[in-house]
Length: 195
Image (cartoon, rainbow, N blue to C red; front, side):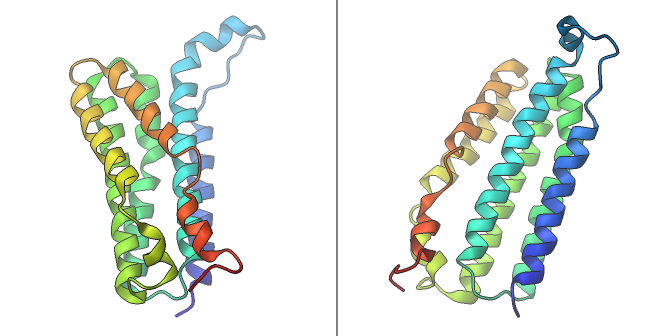
């Protein structure tokens, strides 16, 4: 089965997620900079979530570049990833309106932790179909950055119950790990790459 429909559907879902998230931002009624203060936490949670969704979209795109075909397991694994990511507008809004509350900060991290686990499962489903010697299989490597991210999410979830601000700072730190796209896959699919 070709991968084109999976890519198109996924890109559409990513675009909708970002659109829904931005629609939750409230527009101030006054025309001065001071009017932005009440919506600052919502904007910051939006900016963080936009960054995360962008990171997932970029890495999803690269992973599918290195994928030749898909099957039912890959389609379902992709849907699981999109499910968890589609909850990001909800957790973003909840955190933005309650930046000093433990549960919104913890649930925010849980959503992105589960998104990370789902991305890993999608990767494994593709490898089960195409093999370890595929371009994706050769590009994966040790997964240290992925593991560090997951540990960061878990630590941030725990910190939410100590001080939500600490967990929010840790979420931003995890996002900074991924700002530079993962080049391992790009090297595998570049013209002239071995394989």
